[in-house]
Length: 549
Image (tube, rainbow, N blue to C red):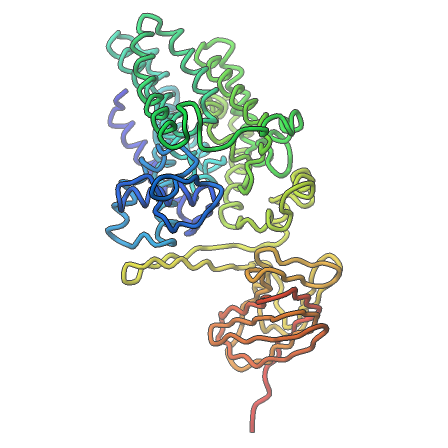
């Protein structure tokens, strides 16, 4: 399995390009799932323990344990990440922001390793240029990109699964010693894949059965190798969850609630469909099916990918919760894309077009997605309906709002600060904001730009509705000076206006019309929020303050 000099160079190039692409947006896009894995990795790096210390806030992603709380997820991803977190701790503190940054960097490293391995595997069957293009399409044009933005379990899965596929491919090489070594690596990697993420067990089981079928004389050895990670997981489950077969995540009553709608949803729903967010998958799937006619390995990959797809479609939360695209299908992507080079060889122009669209979709997510779409639709029937809305899908929503986010990390005295700047490149300039049915209108002299709504701010009944303290109507000043900011609307509580220079409040109990004096520099952001109560804005006006005599 040792690649030649060309293979090493190709792997290094694929890794470097992928890593830069994965971190270029400068911000972590995490969730409750990633937070607990990142905290566990940080605790391992700092204290050598899997148990989050007492005093950690209660959340649904942890369970009580002696001395604190423990993640509901398997420990392998955090164990793999801990050495990297320790290295990062030499440069910055692992405070909450530092943990997020370390998680993103580690996830990007893992994902880039998987991309590099796939590139060297592809090179066995095609040119270096085609192998590189295929690997980068696999890495930047799929949900691998979105799951590399924080420490999900998926990046670790992709590392082990890409190793397993490379090893399975190498078992076709002549020589008993080479086949035995490759088979052993494949068996261990498949077991570690399943240990990272229990949802991968059906897929890995089928690949393992294929391996055993191909290497029957070594079956006992391969089973023994695979049992080692399984026994470690069983011991962990026994220690923290009460039985070797019991995982931290509850599964009771969480299957088949959305079946078979989920099958169609995972493929073509505008909210989570694989073919919507990753159209190149259509060509990759075609190549896999075509190869299955003559290659036994392709048949094994097809069966395993189908098993994973059906398992995920049986899960009530097939949509993957708060995420961009079909996150839960990420684990099967190395299988689905294994024959992508052959697809690009057969259909170069169509393949290039689909690859460009797929990469473009992921870049849209990387520079626009901030969970605002989910916060507007929440859960239940409204969320379910939104998953099928073409006019209000995550992609349509992102393009309609036109807000681009760029993270700007900074380390000062070992403390990491992560500022996120929001831009609206094609948005209007003006000085007056008026709420209209279905949206907002901007008119007047050009005093501000980058007008946007943040978090769950929305237009409702002809008013801009701000309910949560993090909801905001925001814009950026175009010039410096003293300004009058006039707010008209309805408020039962306290409104808050934040600028770089000051924080002002407005208290009202009903309709109000208030004017505040603010000092702004060109490029300063202005945020209008509800500090307490519900704020409904009908009109916001920014005016140059008259000069005082």
